[in-house]
Amino acid sequence: MISRRAFISSALATLGSGPAFANAPTYTPRPKMRGLNPLSPGRDGLKAVLQGAKISGEVVCAVADARSGQVLETVEGDKGLPPASVAKILTTLYALDSLGAGYRFSTRLIATGPVQNGILHGDLVFVGGGDPTLDTNDLAELAAGLKSAGLREIRGQFLIWDGLLPHVASIDPGQPDHVGYSPAVSGVALNFNRVHFEWKRAGSAWAVSMDARTEKYRPEVFTSKMAVVRRAAPVYTYAEHSGIDQWTVASSALGNGGSRWLPVRNPALYVGDVFQTLARSHGIALPTPKQIDRLPSGTVLAQHQSAQLSQLLLAMLKYSNNLMAEMIGMTASLQRGGRPTSLSDSGRRMSDWAAQTYGMQQTHLVDHSGLGEASRLTAHDLVRALVVAQQGGVLKPLLKPIYLQDDKGRPIKGHPVKIAAKTGTLNFVSGLGGFVTAEDGRELAFAIFSADLPARDRISRAERERPPGARSWNARAKRLQHALLLRWGQVYGS
Image (tube, rainbow, N blue to C red):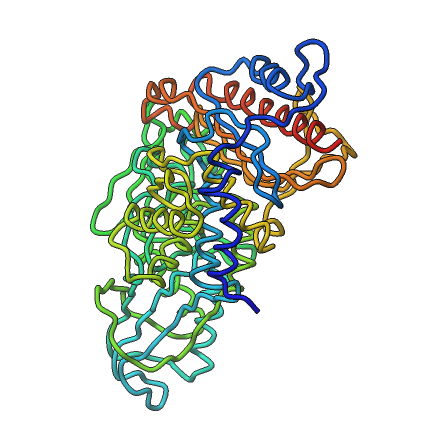
């Protein structure tokens, strides 16, 4: 058995300061084909791919042999661009190293006093353990656990503690208020900190509901309110009043009916609200929930544990869930060196860890999901980490299979080049990183980042959900990615 430190040190010997990166050729010399063809070995073939993309902004990329770390091809490999959700690859490695694949998040209900004859003489405390996957079904099980413990009544308060992690009102405050992919973050979450808003036509008006639904339950929510207002724009407005999320929606946007998930800004009170309803269904009347800053000591009455971290990371990468990335990443920071003060502080800690562990000296991340546009990641830095991760065998099984597409975006069925990677998409930002298995079975590690930052800077906050031109730009960026992967899989594996 060799130590983890010794393994990483030996693996990095072929990367960071060695010839594989310091003096790496930008291509592998091979017999040159006639004409400027994307599958031509060397610079001409790569030039043909980039010219054919017709994409504005910047493109950086690198591909290396996953076994030796030898760089085979690179374009501006040391230039940092926003990684978008490709950053979740680094979050995955950070969490595995800090917490371990078998780590489970625990949510507890504790009593600060004795339970006698079914009566709690003290407070009931809901203790958030940083579980990003807690849902209404899990709360129902916790409520049933209280009943099984013999609890019928409490004489004290119902308290919610979410202070394990710092409270963040929105992962990226620059996003529109109503987008569900940028909710609040804290030490507790429910249904990915989203509330279900549904509307139906009711004569000349609309009937609206806000609930915390799952496939089993549909409890009404009182900590999020919606009012229909007769106006043309904006579609949504948001304000907070005494911990209540107050929404309005433009009547002109509703049509005859529909639904969508809206973000929750006060996770602690949201959890308390829903749990109070579920406890009532078991005959346990709880007082109005109250958020607290300090965790009191007490006796555990019921608890829920998440699935193992490896399973959570698999889901996080597959569905690119931002809340999962942030809560897992901040918990990893907590485990390594105390409670982070903010999301950006935790992102900085992960960047420092990446520099120490993989030699990623030019990596600067402001969060763990990649939603923050101020993050920067280079193609060379990511490839460094991918090569070492592949030698350890921990990352590739968690990545999503991606099928090569032709120039019209259609999957190429049965293609011998196989890809396991993580995508990343923001408006006018696109990334892809992972592994490509070439036609002859050779394993390659790659990173591709594209960004038109001036175009992104011109987007107003209100346009962030569907800005003009972003969809077509991102489609061209994805076609470029697949053209590069097709090239690498054939040129370096035949």
